Length: 95
Image 1: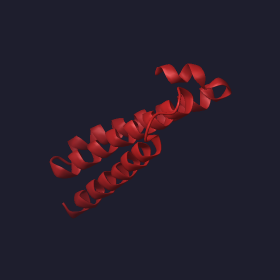
Image 2: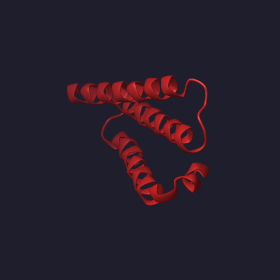
Image 3: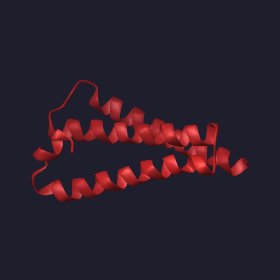
């Protein structure tokens, strides 16, 4: 469990539940390889990793102290995640 969970106070349970949901999303992206290989799988997988990174940076910024360009990093990786996941799903629907 990341170190910032210690600093969440009353939000510890909701944060852990949310982390579990993000983990399930990532596992679902991994399991897509059985159905979609190649570009659709890679795009969704990279999108899920980008989403995890975005959320980790957001949590780190909130509970362990702000860092330089936090907002730009969080938002750019979040939009990149949404873009890659959407593109991967669209490409898989064309197959």
